[in-house]
Image (cartoon, rainbow, N blue to C red; front, side):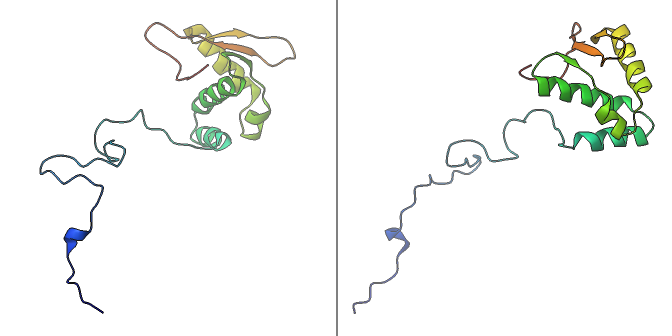
Amino acid sequence: MSEIPFSLDRFKTNEPPEVPGKKQATPRGRPRRGEGQARGPAFVAVPLEDGIRMAVQTGDPRGGLRDYLLYLAWKTKSRTFLVPSQTLRRCGVSKNVKVRYLKRLHTTGWIVLELRPRKSPQVTLVDRPGKRWPLRGV
C-alpha cells in the first residue's frame, strides 16, 4: 500500500471563502437568524380559552373578549360573525359582561353591533381612521 501524505488541498467545499467584516449568509443567500432585517411583530401562541381565563382572573375580561372576537373573525373568514356565549361561559365570562363590552366597542366605533332578542349578537369589525384590527386575509 502506497502512503500518500494527507493534504487539505484535495478536499473542496462549495462554500464561498470567508471575507473579514462581511456577514456570512446561509446557503440560500439569506442572513442568518438574528441578523439582518427584523421580522414582524412578536406574538405568542396561547390557547384561546387559557387567554380568556387569564384575563378574567386578572380582573379584566375585556382583553380575552378582544382575542375571542379576533378568533371568531379568523374562523369565519369574515368581518361579520355571531358571538356565541358558550366558550365564554366555560371561561367564567357572563353574557352580561360580553354584551357590556360589545356595546362599549360599538359606541367607540370599533364594531357595528346588532343585538337580537334570544339570539347571539351579530358583530361587524370596522377599521377606524388610522387604526386597524390586526387581521390578515379577512
